[in-house]
Image (tube, rainbow, N blue to C red):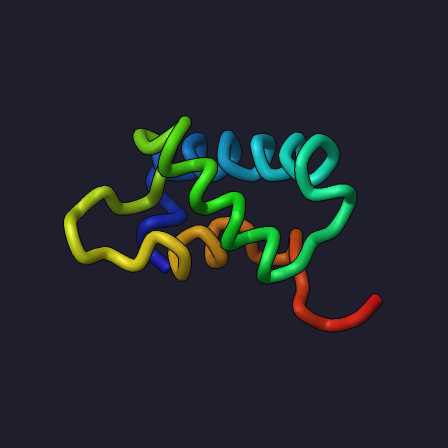
Length: 78
């Protein structure tokens, strides 16, 4: 995906992934599920909107966030 190759985009994505790790430990009780990603998406909107992948009205920030967190969460039972 082209947006991941841009250095500024890669830095933004790294920051989001770090915030996710912190979120999982403090708010998510260690869970890494789609529900936690949805809650984290709301948290990001309230606290770190500038780090969201696409701030345009009508963009699906949840789907973009799931892409940013690829490999760090799963809806499959562990």
